[in-house]
Length: 388
Image (tube, rainbow, N blue to C red):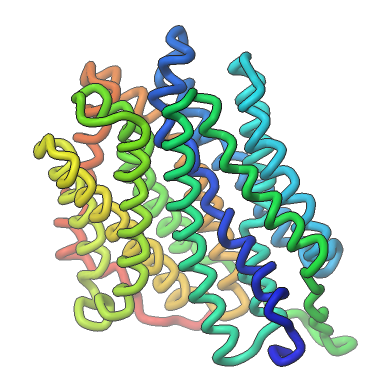
């Protein structure tokens, strides 16, 4: 299969990965949005960042269920990227916050539709080393796209808050590549009369998904609060926030790259390392007062998160049968996005209790990460592989 696919086909697929982390584009601009809508609460403003995560859940599950059998990959790609561009850019023209949230919901649906497509296309169109290589390149391009979009969002927010939505226009390039150069993978045919493999979801999957969901409570206070934290402490504006947050993605690339080595040598302590890395990140952010060290903290946060995510999927692989892995992975991602949405209200609650809507949730996240890290120094989260 791989020999028949041209370079432009590969570029078209990789371009989907490039925009897949577009949800973080406006995070450096959140403080600017707050200033533009001073009558709204912090939790309401944060919905611009978390509402797309909520809308991703049903869209991702639906796209994964129909892709390649009931609906062509190209059709889903065009619909998903189209909604990404329309919903992503539309807030630039809006003045009513309710309208902005509706547009962000549309953006989230588009993002959810394209989320499962990239990996599925690579698996369906390529084989062997080429497939493995492109899966790795896809992950790297997700992070590169996240850096580019986030940096552009923060830079343009320096002009005006609504300019932060314009980087979503880059999705037009992906849309054109999908429309004209994306082929359809061959369908997998099951022998007539053959019984389909049984898919079972063990209770441990839901437990792991919920625990990983809590990681969103650790992660999001930094991602959503950084621009306001820097502004409140006279450290920098949205452009500085964009640079700092881009190093979260850089750290994510580092964490993903070193995960295999960390797991090989640390084994049962891998989850503890990821959580303690995130705790250290908040120490840099909250107590240094230096933009360079805060940037280091953002990188530690990304490293920790990108160690924890593959750890979770490693647990899934050790627990679930091969035919159950895709559905289990979908459950993990769905729960993750659900917790990401709930994080808005968790941050608001902690901010109300502490009286500090930005620093309070960051401090709470640091404590949760540190306590969790210590717990997993004594608890082995990796079960022995079992068959259904």
